[in-house]
Length: 482
Image (tube, rainbow, N blue to C red; front, top):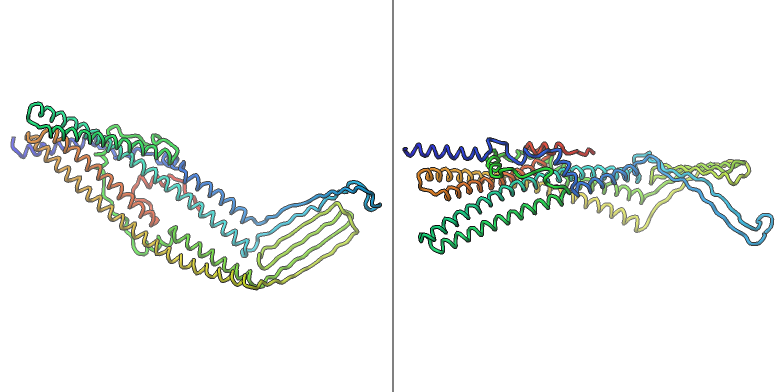
């Protein structure tokens, strides 16, 4: 047989081996083995999600209370006294009891201004922030669960590779031992083979410990066993080759300066600084209002008779801007029939160092908020630039890993050709196969890093992930709408 047919046969054998390792074109794991709804259910068990849900419920109750149109209270009372001696007809000895009036006091939130309105707005904003934090916690928990599962998938392949390398080391040690017994190998070669076997055994134990640690970390993070979502492939090395064969390079998302500006403006960092500035502006207005002249108006109507005493009052002032009303009824103390009405007005003005200082402090707080907003904008721009750079670098690292993988496959093809010619031992051929599998694992890990860097940039830009399995998992997660 000529050399060309032998080479073609070797390449055909290599392709057959790769196809067999890829389990007849099965889709790459672990994504096909994951159910997005089950991943979401497990991710919701994360401590961060539970905490965010409780905080959102607390914020909802606070917003409901702060935005209530009417709030108030009902009160009454009773008193009793005892006299030891008779003080006359007007104060006989014994117990003297009295019941207080039943009083209903209300405050009405009807004017979209003033401290009550400011408090209601802050509470509503806090509730919106809590909902955003809950959605972000669910997203982060889901992405963390997916990342941990991918890590376990790679560790499973690494464990299978370590076991295969230990088997190879044991075969090499047995071969060297036979050569040493025949006198064709010295004690140093046997010692090196034994050391290589020990090293392979240690590598296998180390990766098994990593697998156990990753499983325990998953269970601690989500309070659920990882087996509910994922199990190792029946043949991890075949799944590894299938995933490497299906690996495709994806360029980082393209973006324009306008995209960056929009992402910065809507980012959490700048949004927090903007809300802080709004609060500072409101606080400054309140401080100036409190330091100025305030007006209070009141009205009261009192009606007495045989049925008791009925009092109706109302008030309003320029500081709170919200009206109040009070209704009191005392049925226990009848009196002569009479109706009185009272109108009142008062002016107040705060002066002194305290008032001036509060306004100056509020103005300083506003200036600080403006400066912090500018710094937040700069920091957000730098963070986006770093994310874009990281995505580009991760993509290049992935391309390098792909080149190395291709080189390993080419070397494997060469070794197979020489094995067909009888110039390479089966042990060397097996070593070349494992080297190709190592390169495949390195490619997948580089691909994972590139995908993660690209995902972070896409989320920072407010875009839907381009990787379909992650996009499907995020779509299955509930989204809180403000």
